[in-house]
Image (cartoon, rainbow, N blue to C red; front, side):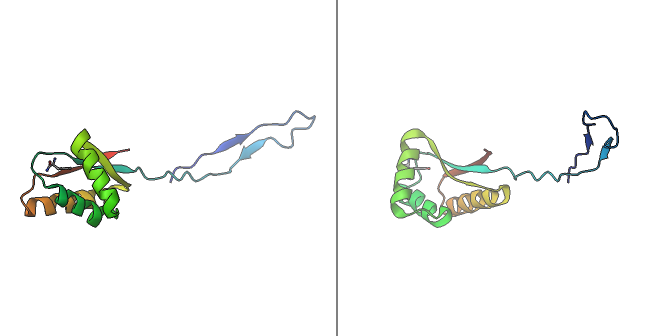
Length: 113
Ligand code: TYC
């Protein structure tokens, strides 16, 4: 934990009774960084497989999954979710593992937001 120590200034009155070191501490809590998880287009992975992956691992509805899959198909890639480092890493591994087991070249990556 990072802590700061502040010096308290003397106020401009005639006595110096309030000069001193204020040992107030403040705990800095940083939010953990977030990671975008993306899927990339390729020429071989079947559209239905990509839709299935989006529904299964990214809690998207069927309609949302079709929309994102088509966006990736047209534009090359899309962000499919934003997660903590550990969750993002797990999602990428699950997608890559399922794709490999079905011999599809689908790529899933993560990037710090
Ligand atoms: N381009 C693929 C096809 O025409 C479909 C596809 C979409 C593949 C999204 C990957 O991330 C992807 N079968």
